[in-house]
Image (cartoon, rainbow, N blue to C red; front, side, top):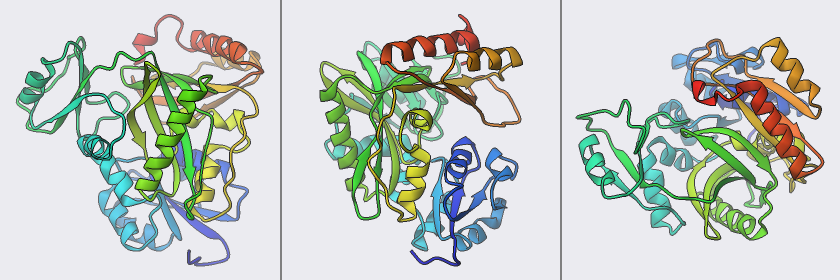
Length: 370
């Protein structure tokens, strides 16, 4: 890596919470952080060394030593330009597959990864016709579908577009025993590491909470092997998150994320190093080490609401909790506004604490927020 001055300048494409946490967790390293924000007023812009927006993306890339991203649905021209300059980490291929869901699914199937049944359709009418072959199904728009957006379940088809010529992915619903996620790291020399996997709870396509570590060592080994293989296949540098369905003793990929991931936020409290610093170290060619799990840890996402002073006090009074609010200007249903990290001495007490946090934030009305 060619450094332009005595300090490495990392360019982060996207100014949301993931970019913010990458900066905050790596502030102690000798680095500057440039942020490209579509709007110019995203949370990470308040702590960036320098901010760029709009058509400034060429300058953003030119004035950064290495460029990464906190979100797949970012300016394609920016990513392609950074890639052409040899600065983009992870690779453009890894994020290009995510820009259209069907490409990710087809790539994984063609390379022999364990997946549920799915078909690619070229219109909404074809998608409905295909979906009706299955007893239960999920229909997802290929472009722009994340955090539950553009996703339609058999019994929740409100808003499904008619006469839409977009590409859709129709998935046979997996009757899983549980969902899980792994956060892994690959450095510039191809060495690979991973955090202990976590159990995840998703509703309407949105992560509600998770907790780590996973107890089943066989499933853990399967997930780690799959993650390491996928990172090698993509010649990947950085942190990757992969979400799985677990059924009958086997782990099947739901989807991967070529970046730091919501299911890795628990590493802020439970591990020897957070996923955010691990990512920055990997992409800047600094030494990366195997993360050590210090204590069981997990998170509850704060979705579609802000926390009141009373809720803040109640959460902190539980002990071994930390609150991370993202500073977003507008509260919307389904929008992640922050998260609460929880750590504990055992998996049992962690589960109890996470339930208390859920009760404080949502009571029995989670459906109102997602």
